[in-house]
Length: 191
Image 1 (tube, rainbow, N blue to C red):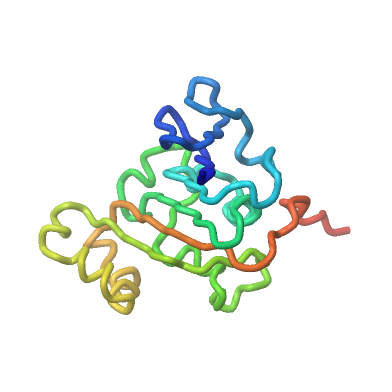
Image 2 (spheres, one colour):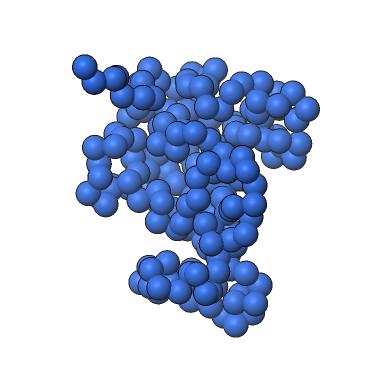
């Protein structure tokens, strides 16, 4: 049987998943602060992990991705959904700490955009899907953005403030060994 962890499950926990959240008024099975690492599970405890509209609320995106990497077994899946930074919802919620785009997770890819020193946690991107506001979706631009990676890059660089995004869906597969759970989240103070 597949074990799924629903991170920040809220009141709509994914059916059959083990839910974690900080709020006792949610459907969480385990209460924990999602900004404190490690989460109370052993390495490779889950076949899949879902973080639906959660990552933008967390203090340390890199550390959260390392934790997701640690918790999901090799060959498993990590699914993330978050608002696109050009959508109204990205900025209207005062609890959002990060405003992301469809390339925000490139540091975790095998190519790491030249910034591999931020983390050793690597993921293979299975898919990225961008949802545009309905007007642009009806004109077929969402299909272009999601079908042609070069067009998505062009859209992010030049068009996204006019042809605004709504949300993004990502699915990743963890690569390599788990990143140790005890990594500090802040650099030591310089002397």
